[in-house]
Image (cartoon, rainbow, N blue to C red; front, side):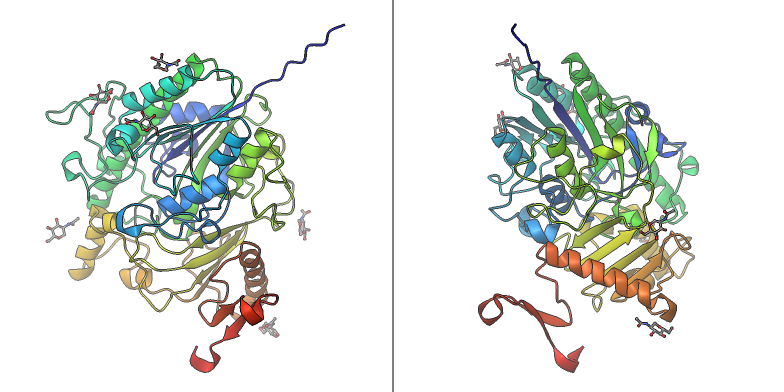
Length: 499
Ligand SMILES: *[C@@H]1O[C@H](CO)[C@@H](O)[C@H](O)[C@H]1NC(C)=O
Ligand SMILES: *[C@@H]1O[C@H](CO)[C@@H](O)[C@H](O)[C@H]1NC(C)=O
Ligand SMILES: *[C@@H]1O[C@H](CO)[C@@H](O)[C@H](O)[C@H]1NC(C)=O
Ligand SMILES: *[C@@H]1O[C@H](CO)[C@@H](O)[C@H](O)[C@H]1NC(C)=O
Ligand SMILES: *[C@@H]1O[C@H](CO)[C@@H](O)[C@H](O)[C@H]1NC(C)=O
Ligand SMILES: CC(=O)N[C@H]1CO[C@H](CO)[C@@H](O)[C@@H]1O
């Protein structure tokens, strides 16, 4: 008797938004219309507590694609132009691991990481050889590229990574298209047309402001423009999912949707407050239907994406998957596979934690931070707390931030939950009880009754820094020595009484 073994081929489709947040129906935003994302959410597990490990574009994407935090993969800041950051040349990235395991890889849209030898996809249509507006915001153009990738797939499993540039701001580079490029391709005179996009416009008075954006007309108009751009992202997700379906891959593909960092508003992107690091995430598997349209409250990190996708493809050579011991390093990776969540919710979140590591966004914005977040607490270590918290170029000229500057100068009410002084000036340690203080304004680091919690979190953060070989591990009060005399016994050597 001849036995025929059919090996089911598996595929992955990963979609990442650029500065996208929770302006999504599935996350209970009642105003912003996102029918395509909502439909995807209905067939997904919806993450309530997913976080990026760094709130900056290139560092977040490098961490996502390597499973290593920014200080471990080397992408300390932005990749483009004068910022000039790259990951270390010997880092193993997801596309390279998959490629060496016979999986075809494709990227469409914003790449924003390097060097190209570390992040090598078989099929690349990115800002490196396309206009970023076309490859990242023109959903018709992106759809045709996805079709090309899918049509040209032969007999291999694939990993397709589609990185929208929407809903990133563009007021500082292409002001002619509006603050969020919401006019690009909308059919008005001089704006061109994107055939697959039906723009949706919003009334500023009606938009839903998150707690961290000031309630002023300037900020509301800014958010209304962001919503219009989200309609392009949403419809883009819809047309590309349609391509996947037409190619016959809706029933064998793991689909993940997320974003790289917080939204580009005050207290958002570049911050370690939840408004800067919490991310939307949907994960849809054709083989796991138990928890569709259900919510998981388990803490997840974008550092978990590499272990999840390797688990999906049953690739175990490079990384051992361990779902319990988050602090157990697996060949240098500290993340865990998220696939078990598709079947069952954990019964106890008490010991769960996610970690974060930020060094800079733009090259001028040196402001290293390390953080640990559990279900209940967040501890942020601001290593450069003697300097004002830095502001980046595109956020600086945004209407929302200009409004805060103008009002501060004119001594007018801000209608904001902070003021500029608080925002710029941060203590070295910030400890928040997220249950009592979800908006993270009451720092408990100096309150004696929290000393044990503080010490426990500091120890756990330090252990993670050690495990992930953080060069900043002794900063800012000591110097790390790990060579020569200290080769076998690395030490933090004190600066004595200077700090
Ligand atoms: C971009 O580069 C890839 C190869 O790296 C090539 O296949 C593709 O055709 C290029 N696209 C454009 C628009 O030049
Ligand atoms: C978007 O892409 C399509 C297909 O390439 C093209 O026909 C259309 O003109 C583009 N729209 C804009 C605004 O560039
Ligand atoms: C959850 O785990 C913590 C720490 O291990 C333990 O103290 C607590 O009792 C557990 N809670 C429940 C409801 O099992
Ligand atoms: C801020 O003030 C300047 C100078 O008065 C003005 O030109 C600008 O429109 C204001 N911007 C916002 C967002 O309020
Ligand atoms: C924490 O503070 C209390 C006083 O509030 C003190 O008795 C205790 O020794 C402190 N514990 C640690 C670990 O510092
Ligand atoms: C070799 C191959 O199949 N090429 C196809 C790639 O996709 C484009 C666009 O769909 C087709 O025109 C090519 O024939």
